[in-house]
Every structure is written in C-alpha cells, then in structure tokens.
Length: 220
Image 1: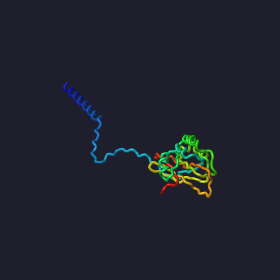
Image 2 (image 1 turned 30 degrees about the vertical axis):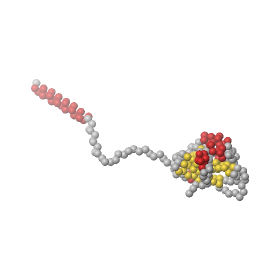
Image 3 (image 1 turned 45 degrees about the vertical axis):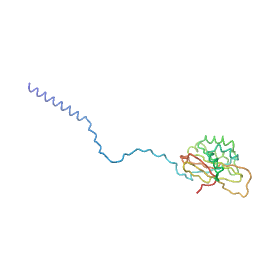
Image 4 (image 1 turned 30 degrees about the horizontal axis):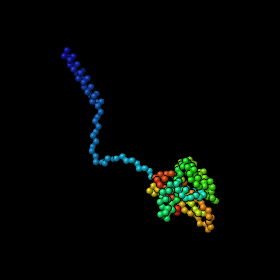
C-alpha cells in the first residue's frame, strides 16, 4: 500500500509539472521596452498642390479671325475683364481689350450664340479666315486638353492686320497681348473687328483666376 501511494504521488507531480510547462510555453514573450531617443518626431505632411508648368511659347498656337465690327460697349458684357476696362478706359493710356476664355465645346457654342449676334462669324476678310472656319477644328478632342484665350480688337480700317504678340502669367493672372502687325501706305475707311488669340494647354491655366488682354506687347 505505501508503494502504491508513492507511485500515485509521483504520477500527480509529473502531471502538474507538465501542465505548468505547457502554460509557460503558450504565454507570449513580453515586448521589449524601447530605449528613449532624442530624435525629433516626424509629423506627416500633405503634398503641395502641383503648380502650373512654365509658360512655353512653343505650346501657344496663335490665330486671328475676322469678325466685322460692332459698338465696343456691346461686346463688354460678354468679356471677362469688363470691370478692368471700365476702371481704366478713362484713367490710363494702357489699352485693355475685351478678353474671352473658352474651355469646352458648350462654351464655344454659347459664345457663338451670344457674341455671334453682334459680330460676323461666317465671313473672312481677304486672307484672314472667318471665326467659323477656324472653329471647325475646335471639337471635343481639342478641348480635352486645350483652351482658347482671345481678345477682340476693333479697327478703323480693314486694311490693318493684327496678331498675337505675347502672353504672360503671374500672380494668378493670365494676360495676352495683341498689336497691329502691318503698316499699309493706304488704308480703306471701313470699320473692322478681329479676334486675336491663342490655343493654349489647359495645364498652363491651372492656377489662373483672372484673365486680361492688352494692346501692344509685353513690357520688358
């Protein structure tokens, strides 16, 4: 009988030891405590918005269309810089021109429906094409990544020719320039009007909130 008790005691001890060992093995090892460091905490930052690319003259395609003539004040309600024109027309020798921006086919059709009631879009003048002729290439594919920025220039003679002479972008303002590009000895006395501007990548207008046009060329 004493021998049996000894065997039962030994067996119980073995079972208890096995259970304790299994419990210790299943318990995960504690994570090591990180050593203190003097390195600055890195604060996550938001990426800066992409700025518009540099204005590349090679990407600007000039155009000019004959439009006939109308009263200057009739065009003002449709242009983007009418407030600038009204504020400076009597106070400055700098001549601001009515400027327009078209970025979609719908905008093009809206321009035709509005300003087209005042101007003549279906007829050219000698070598200068009509607005409608140029607009044939301004379709959905064109407006996918390009826009039109142009000014209306009125003239006291149909003999004078006008062209795009420069563009600049600064402080959110995109400005184009138009000037007379010929000097005929004799000129006709018919009133005329011209749309002078550029086809421009939309990316170049990304940060622009104001548009303007001036007569002459960019100031040095």
